[in-house]
Length: 261
Image (cartoon, rainbow, N blue to C red; front, side):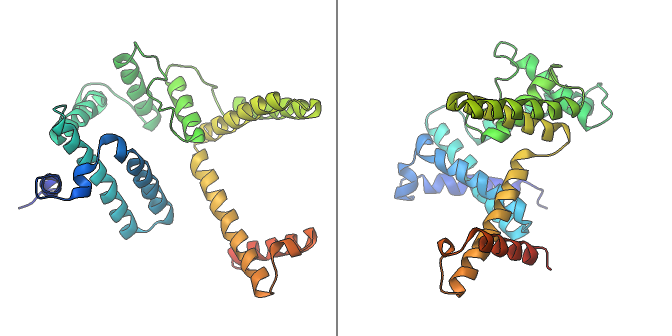
């Protein structure tokens, strides 16, 4: 009788065949460095599948992402670093070590307590690197802002509620306006960054995901914009041919269609 995870061994064996003497020429030419782009691409496609709520698409994209893990582990094995078992062992040990309320005697009473305990344990493990060391610099900036805030919060550096960052938004917006009035581009960029960080922090304190919120907003904008383009095309025109008032009318029509009106 099979158990969950048994098929992972089949994927590992398949990857070994692809990298073997009679395997795929393209696969055999790949390096950790050449695969970097695919790891990022596949991770984003997983997120896209989650946002679309399409199970079959999600299954496929998770498989593609898993392939990247197995592929890179096979390459590190060739280098004599570690194999797929080393990857699995490392994360398994970490999960046990950082869940003492499940595998030990510690008690937590809600998700917030679990997160704080996890971060406290992680901070002790990496104390020589600092509380923020685990946040990748390459993350999308809004996501990085949330993760930095979470790390700082885990060591007590945070506002007690959403009121703090909400007031900070007004403060930073005023400073941005003042920089704009002076025509100081460098100061404007500085204050815009502070404003975006405050907005991300406010979202985090409200239990929202700023990265997902912006992604959804961009998707809505793109959908409405495409509708406007199609409407203009159906009239043999280009969006540049419309007045501002006419563009506003097209946009409102697109919004109405989006809401089923």
